[in-house]
Length: 389
Image (cartoon, rainbow, N blue to C red; front, top):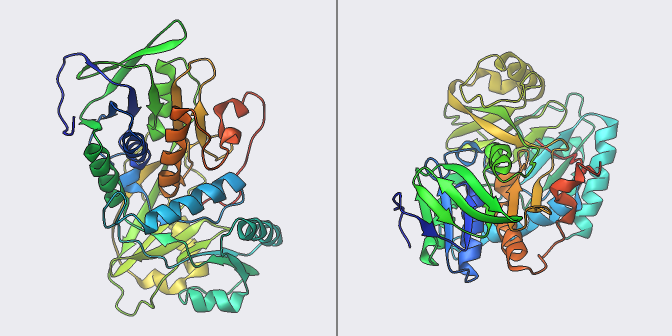
């Protein structure tokens, strides 16, 4: 069961994981490693070809929500050991995350966040503007009031993380089917019966939806409401910058959402576009570049002279409160889901793989994810995450 093979013949699985990004491969790895005998992962394209391959690669534990802090910190621990388990070099650079703050209300919110992070063992701290400028010499202090920094955060290579988890999952007996699209989920008597794919029917009593921006459609196949919308985000790359001071922390101008970090000999630049509307747009557009240039000019003006060498567009998987959906559906037992991460899914992949494994096995995860159940929207129990990029 270790190769990407399959035909139109009916097969059986103990659990089918839908989605071959970091979340799906992490879940498949953790399930197979735990001894679940017949784990099948299905991905309609190539592994990591959805949002994961377009991720900026940031990894952090600086959040405002306790669950997100715990998931981020647990994942950071896993990323540091990734070369041994599952066994893959991921080019982890722990250069820190630096959030630049220019509004009094943001300073207060981040002070509260840092206090909570510290209580949970995260070594973040508030720093004065002068220190922020030393940490990230490309920025100018104009309008800044303070910053928040954690030295343990950083970035790594998403494609390598997917490769490591997929290889590890196969090694433990999981089967991974690429080029295999899910076209239906059969239920009966309140139970899951099978997953229908473009390459045949898989009889199974359990499904894990880790389909990212496409999760709402997967949920509908089983009669499950997963309020996830796709939202295009774009990044660009600069030409090599020989005089670039290093190390370069992941630097985020929180007011504008403009961010940058080192990528090769240059920088990766990104920013959200408030004019972007939900949809499966994956083409690159220049409409956001004037706003990006304005933000660069205000916060890191020397970068206006840097040439751009390309970029890409990818999809965020956004929920109404910008927080993830993790849990098991109450009306369709054994339909589990891990989706809607709203931009921080890649960095939480290792921990969420553990959590979904434990939910599947009926044991308590290392942290309580009940607040992230999709039912929170029906009960108006939103959990807005303040510290998002």
